[in-house]
Length: 451
Image (cartoon, rainbow, N blue to C red; front, top):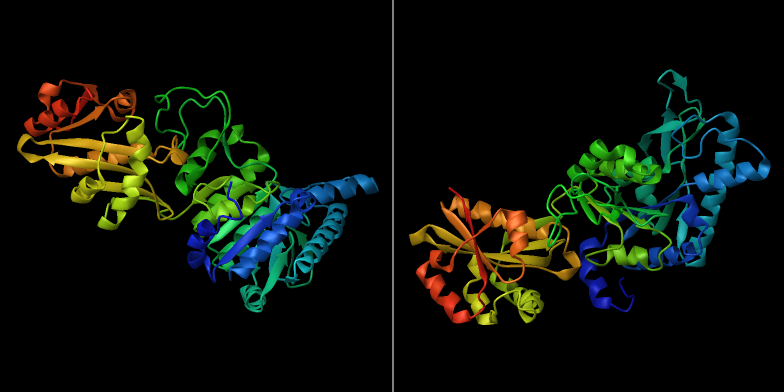
């Protein structure tokens, strides 16, 4: 969890987000939670850093409660099913009340807020032979209005309601409204604040899900018996989950994941799904590398690149824990600087979290995969496997016939994830065999044929 006192962590991100727009979508249940006032304090902090914020809120929780209080029966709660006349009136009353509570909270934090008719809707129509009556779909978002509010330091508050050109009102799904608002404002982040911690991998999956595999994990084919929070997903990985395991995902998570994919495909770079009940959770998600929930990213959020001389200090710091535990061979800062061209690094949002090196022995047509290391906070996310795959691709491009690695503790991982097989020190290039003998580490030598 990010500490509010960790100003260095926050200030690293400020230049990147200054004068950008975040769209924050708050479920109705979160508006009623005790942490909502803290979330509005977080919004005030974002605004103080010149980050524009538009708030989209839901009202399903309030519609359900109002229906119970008035002893009426609602035809739908989330704005996706049929909305009859009774439910529309419940939605209007409940949503307007949530909007007012949000405006009250903004005022309490010295923020100006406004709610306008920024969402133009049209009827959802007849779907599968059923008239959805007062359920609507977003036709367009009045971007000029929202940008004018943001330009005047006013936080737009947008309910799950829309009107058409004839002045008719429609009940909308707030997750969908948030996507359209984020696209219209060219937001750099869409953040869903909900009542669960993020998207979880369904249990008993026949194979690991896209972001599960990683250092020390079981081989493909093992079955997980408990749900696991998925920290980061590409849009493609999220789509694969929706395609293969849709029926195993709880409805609330399913809606968020579907709309995250829509947002990513629509040009929103990052979509976050987090538990809005966690104190300081919003700031921890925005101003730290690991966050607290699930991130679905459409652009190249994670990237492998060649190391540069300026990376030497960070590389040296990254590998120290593994050196102390005798997982990696000791390397001095000078050695890293001297061989920096052999290293490549894995970045998460421009932060170095993993590395590996590929040392070529062209006379023997061999190459060594060395110094594979991942920050402990990013283990079990498949980063090591990606570094290994990258090294293999580079070795093949260099027309290397055989790739080898030396390991004292992770040899099972290299065999299971990389396809390496045990070999003999006698098969090492002469210069590498000499250093092997002098090290006294007695590492297991592993080989993989590339041609």
